[in-house]
Image (cartoon, rainbow, N blue to C red; front, side, top):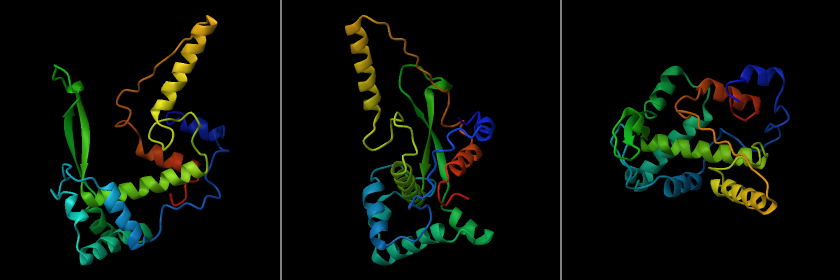
Length: 211
């Protein structure tokens, strides 16, 4: 889909699948209860910290005063899209990461055996969890994704596709028929994703708050 964006837009493919009318949002202020929920349930303890070397435990054990500062910072990010470049730079300075190479396992040690992992500062992790939950809520409520899209979705894990394949294989065997299966693996798919194309797709789907 990403590689054929120009054709997709010209032919209005999937133009009927949008989030128009959704009550979801990608911007807005958070209450203290909402922030506390994200900190408690999303930030995992015992994880390798990001560039600032501050573990998630620091946020999970914040004092009341520190919590109010964190809440004000998060709400600044999500409610002030019109802020100046200087103000934005102060906020974005927290949102950086470290790329670390992890070995996939096995007996060899080639470059292809390494998988890049991004280590985020705990504040940046918090923002990502918030955006991810908002996006999931919007696309699930509007049925934006295809029913067959499995993996990373609540109630639609990859196990569903495995069960489908088991059923198809079982039925083919029972009926004495042949089934051809094609597995496609996109090399370096995650790292090769075009961020500009991703934003364009989100605009096509009318994701609220994307501008």
